[in-house]
Image (cartoon, rainbow, N blue to C red):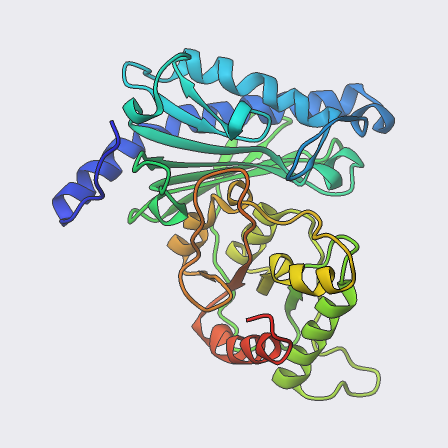
Length: 351
């Protein structure tokens, strides 16, 4: 049932209304995963959670990842209407996707559901920082269905064992954002206001370029330094121009922009492939579409999320594509940083 993209407002409204019917089951699934993963963290030693289960082309799968993977398919089979098939897109599936009900054909599916069951595995399994469950749902426009086609996005925080509060945020395109803070102690949720930073400069705020893993980190740091110096000038004695937070989690980075904690974030890792090749090295792990499948929520809040050229972020809904992305808290931050970023990339032949 591959369909054509709507061409008028009435068609778009009908499509988004259909997408909205997935809100309740998606939030329920994410809550189930959250509780299962927290319970696993409570009951197992770090050494058990960090055991490598398998190596995949795009990432390493740890024992903790299996907790959530095993829940998704059975939940969807039980909780959503599969009269018309859907396509589930996630790591660990043969070819990166599975048609539900099983045995169905991809061309008969009405929706594509892309999921990252645990984004931020590394921080969570060592109990350093929260991870996030990410889900995006788009109509099935065939293999070319992309991030800009997502009509519903939701993300749920997987808290540390010592943490009793966990946030949940979701959006249907054109209908704004809803967010709640869940209390694990009493099982209650309260409305959570989210507001991106309105600051006009990165000065005295958090701004960063992702350099989580080894491989040309000095190049990324040099780009970072060039941008900061261009925006704020030389560092003054005893002062700090701005700060950075290497949150090893793309969904978490988007959330930090949504919540007003960060003002500028860029993940440029895919651009470094040629730099590494000249050194005889391979490009390591990069961001994939499932890592940023909730960028719709950020956009609905007014965060500006782009590719490195400044265009709306786009990538096919699959598990293979490498994604470089940039997030600005607002237009003023974009005006301050984007020209400097693009200049730094061009100077190095990366753009």
